[in-house]
Every structure is written in structure tokens, then in C-alpha cells.
Length: 212
Image 1 (cartoon, rainbow, N blue to C red):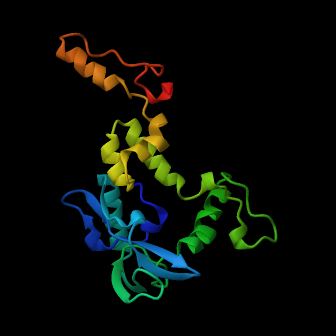
Image 2: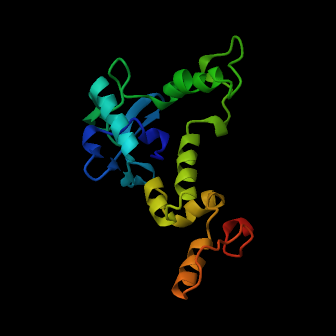
Image 3: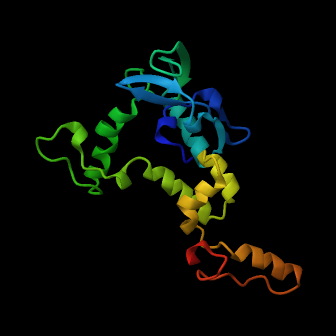
């Protein structure tokens, strides 16, 4: 669903709206010097994101296999007042997921095992895996964004789902994933004027971001 990594371990069962097919992103889990706490999403803005039916079904299966766990963490900062929340994702010990620990012991070993990134050098510490930034968990957010925009999802809607403060930020990152930019408008005009509306703007169209 294009969440930032800190937002992934944060949702509670009440954040899922199966009737509307959406997820409410109300907080994330952050850490300062190893101390976890609940924080607002980036920019201190909550948002609602689209939840594909395939993801909704997967979440239902997950909840059946691993019931939500009530966790108490400080709110707003590590020294903040404690707040209890029922989390969809937790460790096997019933604690909130610490992103850095998860990256070290789960995420990096997985692509290394699949030969996507180099394996950790012999004798290196667990946190010294060779994952480059492009191989980090954030690549899943970029993958989601590229799929949405290539499918023709409006930039304004996508920006709201991504949590960007402006659609201009979305365009700045992902304009190259919009191969049909420039074609839909002229197709609409062709249809209005009674002409065939199946001509598409090429990648060199002055309306296409690829031409800039």
C-alpha cells in the first residue's frame, strides 16, 4: 500500500476499514537510541490509503493466524506518556517491531540469500550487511508508486496515498513512470470533436514528462 517503513508496524485492527477498502495511517513507530515510541506519520499528518482486496484478504489471514497484540509505548517521544495500542504486527515475544532490528536480521539476509545483494562478509557484524540504499525496504514504496502511476492513477490521488505534501513532489519523483501522460487529454478532445480517439501521444510529445 506504499507505506513508509516506520508506518508498516503501526496499524491497529481499528485502522482497517474493510467496508470502504481503506487503511487509516494514524501513527508510526520510531526509535531514538533504541527506545521505541508512537509518533505521527511524516509531516505530522494522518492519511487514508487505498487497500486492494488482495491485501485485505491477506490481512484477514494474518489476523487469524497471529491475533493482534496489545503493546504499550510512549507517545510523541521516548519520554512521553505511555499509550496502549493493539498492533497487527508484533515480534514473537509480543513487542512492537523495531525497524532497524528487523532490517538487520530479517530484511537484509533475505535478498542476500536470494543473491540480490552480496552476502555479509565473513566475520562482519549482523548490521554490516551489504544492502545499498536502492535495495532497502523503501524500494517497495517506490515499486507501489510506479505501479499506481503506470496504471493511470491520478497524481493528486496518488500524492494523497503516498503522504506527499504536494502532487508536485510526486511528479518530481515519479513522472518517468507515466508513459501515457499527454495522451488522455488529446483523446478526450478527439472524442469531443467526433474524431477517432485512439491516437496516443508518443514519448516525445511536448505534453509528456519524458520529453522534458
